[in-house]
Amino acid sequence: MSKDKNIVRLNHQGMSQRNICKTLKVSDRRVRNTLKKLKELNLTYNDVKDMDDFSFDELFTKKPEEVILKRRPDCKHIHEDLKRKGVTLMLLWEEYVEECIALGESYLKYTQFGNVYKSYVDTNKLTMHIDRKPSERCEVDWAGTTIPIYDRTLTNVIGKVYLFIYLLVYCRSVNICLLKLPWI
Image (cartoon, rainbow, N blue to C red; front, side, top):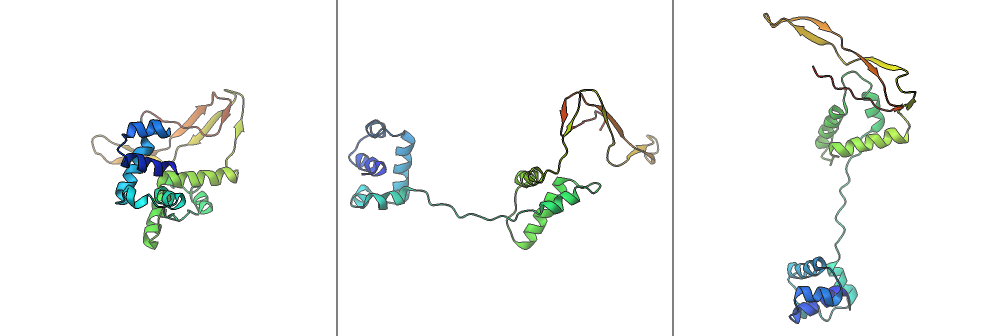
């Protein structure tokens, strides 16, 4: 006789859940879940006592939930779009969601979307690993678009400034460097 069927039998005989756990050497969670499932199915011990073990166990095993297929993003397209000025992964995810909704398909959440893209980048070796001695070289780049300069009295834009970043790398190996400037 299966353990679940024994749990139902002993419960029907009036044994406490704690004693059922000790007698059958099962967890209290299993006893609770088995009795809960029996109650959800509106069954009693008399309904299930003549069932064979296979049929009884089939009642208590979780049915595999229907798998919802979600539309996979086109990672090659994402990689090409990220090279354009002002395009971010968040922006591409929002476009992907709008497209999926328009087609009536399920879509990935942002984290899953990012993980799919990251695995694409990793499998296709699309990143560059730079190995160097600490403080040997510095990284130099322009930071995005220009920054407007305002006149405090007129509140009009006087001009635009380019933000130039100079970063001395102290670590031995660099894959990604993040820089947060206090005034931005």
